[in-house]
Structure formats: structure tokens, C-alpha cells
Image 1 (cartoon, rainbow, N blue to C red):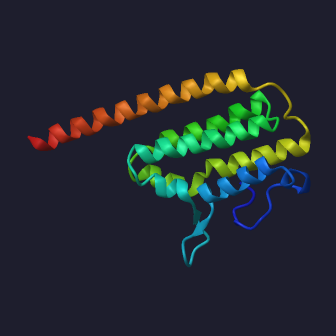
Image 2 (cartoon, rainbow, N blue to C red):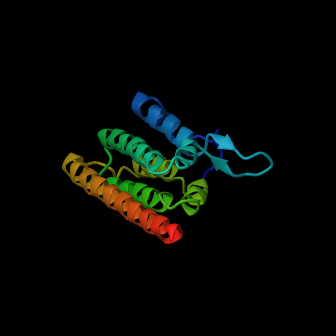
Image 3 (cartoon, rainbow, N blue to C red):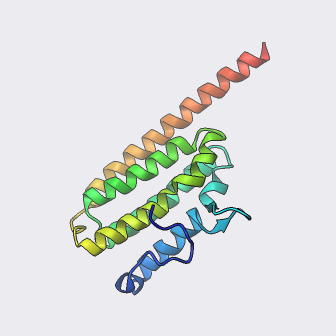
Length: 167
């Protein structure tokens, strides 16, 4: 990531005129860089805090990230750009679902902020045009199935651990 300071403008002047992109900017910052650990340069957001709620927090965070991506797609993101953004969210969701390690990962990966920067850079290059909705629907379905599979795997692991320690 190029920028990590919450005040740094990621969007250019033209992009800031779009209410949808301003919302994406504000929501991305809230999710990933809104707060700072005192005495450090480490920033975190609601995504990190939601990750502290096992299962439900990761699911909610993934849903919010999906809304951001859908908004960026509505603003003209190409299928290739959306795939890159969804990959960031998938990595964040999968690794973020691992207890403790996932929370630490959320401090540094910042998928939503990465996606905001991707949108901004593609917007500047003018390479982000195209119809993306069929791709989004397919990928959202795939991500939902992936999340369910991850939740099921975590349930099996916790069930195994519970039975292991119960004996």
C-alpha cells in the first residue's frame, strides 16, 4: 500500500465529486485505517474490531467489503479490477477467520483500503470500463460458499478440540 495515513487523499478531485466514491473512501477508511494505536504508526479500523467477534464479525466485514466493491463496480470498475478486489477480500476473510492470527493479519492487510487504491489507480489510467455484474453475482456466490465452507471447517476444528480436551 502506498498510503496509510487516514488524512491522505486517495481519490483525485474528479473522484471526490462522486457521492458514491466519497462514501467508498469514508467506509474504507472506517473499516481499515480510522484509528491509530497510540505511540505507533499502526492504524486499524472496524474490520479489526469486527474480527474479534468469532464468525459473525468476519461475515459482517465480508458483507461490508462486498458493498464497497459493488459500489465501485457501479462506478465503472472492470471485471479484472473487481476480481482483484474480491481476491483481496477473500484473502482477508479466509485468513481473518483464523483466531488470533487473523486479527493480527487484519492490522496489516487492509483489504478495503487496498481496493480503494486499486480503484483510484485504475480510474486514473482509464482502464476500468466494462460490464461487471454477471461476474460479481458469480463471485459473490462463490465467496458465500467459501465462507460457509470456512465456517464449517472452523466448527469441525473447534468440535475436535472440544472433544480432545474433554477426555
